[in-house]
Length: 364
Image (cartoon, helix red, strand yellow):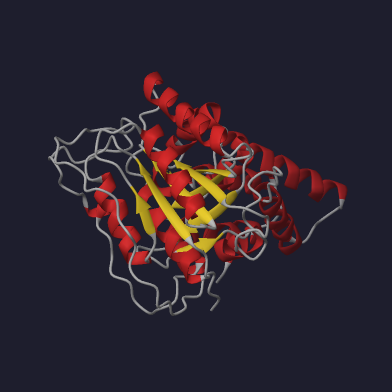
């Protein structure tokens, strides 16, 4: 079993925390039919809970995609065994769409596989299935030339200076939890990490990030709830530079993508970053909820238009039977998936590898 991130002992003291958030009425926000947040003042949902850190290794991708494999992709091998006829392609199309691969992406995949089968005169079902796997890997293997902070082994790039990661996404996707997992992963690899609590809009968001910071042993820069997010980011950048941080991870409000003023606020945060660090943010990481399926694509398009998303972290992959949305994200959005959430624990974050992911879908 492979560990994507290995924990190591660290004797450094717990992080220096920012000012506590003020109590206030909860502000419900999210995408209709996708996310419903708690309306109770200051009450954290089950998703907001910060789990205890244990010594076990991370859940592997193979376990995270088990439901998807058993429900949809496990059927595909049987479909091919019945022979390469018209019914195969029809059933394959239905299966991929049902797994949330998306209509456009599904059509592209099947057209490419059919073309290869014809050009290479493939007659054996096993070889045709291999051609499908290769096409799926190709769809996922996106390289935009952006997001240089990740090296091939999942570590921070060796580029000089601090790396700034701007994390965006609607409420309820697991955004703050994913940031906590990233902080844990990089701290375990010996990196000095600082978190910026720029989600000053949602109730309990600041406290939640502080809890994750305490768990990971990293500093959190925070203001009071309702403060200007740009001011938080400004202070966080200054603190990160002063403390010699390797990476600054910025949490942002989970904006309802139909609210133009809130999207403009996100653009403002982006401008604040660029004024202090001209080549930043080095990664604009969009957190998507794998369980929301094709609804996630609409979110992705809005955030990409607002701040130029450079990569995706797919959260809650272990909680859905429709993991085919990964293919749609890469194909339609044109950005790579960097990480996937494989469980609820701090260490359950896996660096995304296209070939391993595809093989896991067809394993067994």
